[in-house]
Length: 139
Image (cartoon, rainbow, N blue to C red; front, side, top):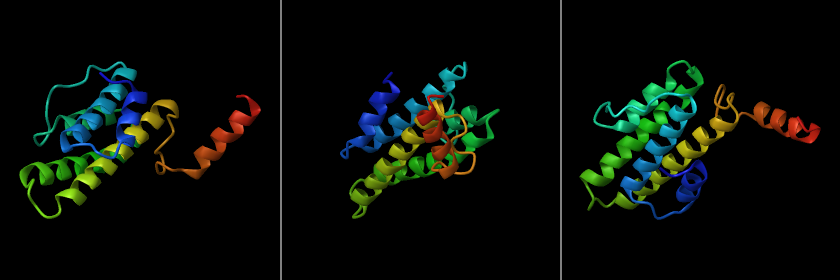
C-alpha cells in the first residue's frame, strides 16, 4: 500500500484514470482505519468499498463524516466515466473525479496530523491559526 506522502504525490498528478482516483480514495481511508487500530473492511456499500471504508471510519468520529459526500461524489464520477467512457463530458467528469480524490487524500491526510480538522470545515481558519501559533512557540 502507498504511504500518505505517496498518495499526496499521486493526486498532485493531473493524469489519473477513474480507477486510480477511486483507489487513492480507498487507500487514504485504509490509512485512517489502520491509524485508529481498525481492520479495514472488505465489504462494499452501494457497490463501492470506498463508501464502506468511509462508513467504518466515521464510527466514533463525527467530524470524519465531513468526507462522506466527497466519497459519494467520487463514486458517482467514477460511474459516469466508466459507464459512459465515450460521453462528450468524460474529460470534465474525470477532472472532477481527480479533484475529489485529491480533496479526500489531503483532508484525511490532514486529519491524521490534526485530529480537529473538519470539525467545522476542512479549511477551518481557527485551526490553521492555532497550528501556526503553536509552531512559532515550539509547541
